[in-house]
Image (tube, rainbow, N blue to C red):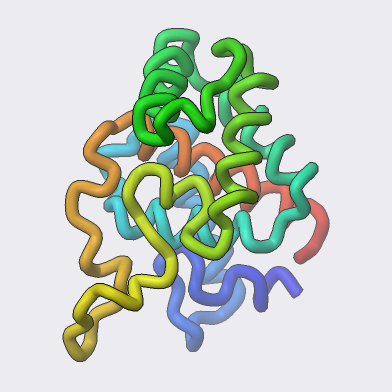
Amino acid sequence: MVDQMLGGLFGSQDTDDEPTRRRRARDFIDRHERGAHDQMSDAEVLQNYRATTAQLSPDEYRQAARDAMRQMSPEQRKELRREMRQRSGGRYEPASESPEDMAKAMQQAHQDNQSHGGLGSLFGFGGSDASQPKSEGSSPIDKVKGVLDNPIAKVALAGVAAVAAKKLNDRGL
């Protein structure tokens, strides 16, 4: 089951064996935990965020977001709160910078925009991309350029993806 969940995640190919997929997942989680977000492409973060969060219930998502927010400094949470407020026109404004309030607003944004990329759509990445021209051999994620132009968005989405991956691995999915 973990093998199926990890298929296509963390840069995995469908033909990769389970140990390779697990190694790539551990690498992504490790880079996040070390704060090496500059070693992650926007496309990698978005792909892993969308794939892992699709496996979570709303409560599990909120828990993953809360855990990810606990890993961020108060200054990072303040910047993320400001960014969420600005990008959503005030629709998703956490009541405070506490991990709980941040997670609640993130979960609401994710749930409201799930068909368009979840929280990632708030930072400019949409899920349907029907209006965008597609060239052969490229995916909508390949066309992402500057989506996560604020590094704090990348840190937040990578954090949720890493925490979610750990939770999914623990429960054997």
